[in-house]
Picture 1 (cartoon, helix red, strand yellow):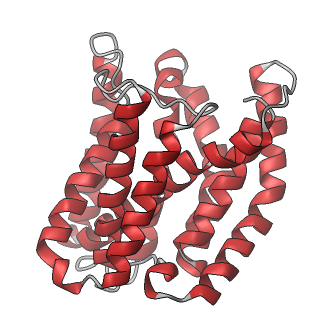
Picture 2: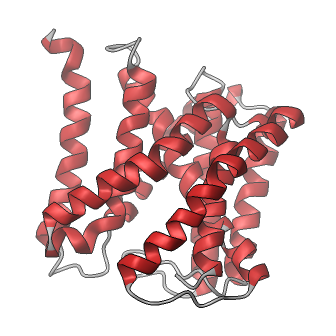
Length: 278
């Protein structure tokens, strides 16, 4: 029993250690954020998987990963509403962020696709040319996400204490692809797959959803770095609400309908957020 749960315990302890380390070092490294650490580790793991299993990749996999990476890189060059944090205080300008975000997306997509070809938990239907499944997944993601996007805009208005300020609709549509694609590829595709690989031998029946749960919690709570320093209990509570309303749906959509569905869900949340000025 002890050996069976050891990988899960170690993974959970490692994730918590990263959160605690960031909080402990926050005053010394003010430009470091938890999600940057997790994303860097995910990209490193993705590179390892590609080097190990690149023979399993198909031509469509390389094309899909390249299209995603190039689209994100070009989109970042023209982004006006989306402004990412400086990466470890080093990469600040839009040109550097374009290369960084595009490269991270490309590598993480390749890593996720490598794991997908090994029977991983999430499919990217477009890479296999399954366009009907892709279209259905996107439509389902939008249908599930639209009411929660409206709720998100309303909740932001309440919590941030300022009224809606309408912004450029086209910019909102395009800039929302940055968090919508990048975060889903990193957390819902690559990281979920990497965690599944670690857990699948010790917990074969539970590995998929346990790995998905860890990746979801890591993603959700990484948004609350500063709040954890100011009010840890409030951060825990808000993270739990975020996980329930906006974490579980894309998790289930990614598993049941494919990564495209989770991206569509995430994208419509940020469209609403940017459009209403948050």
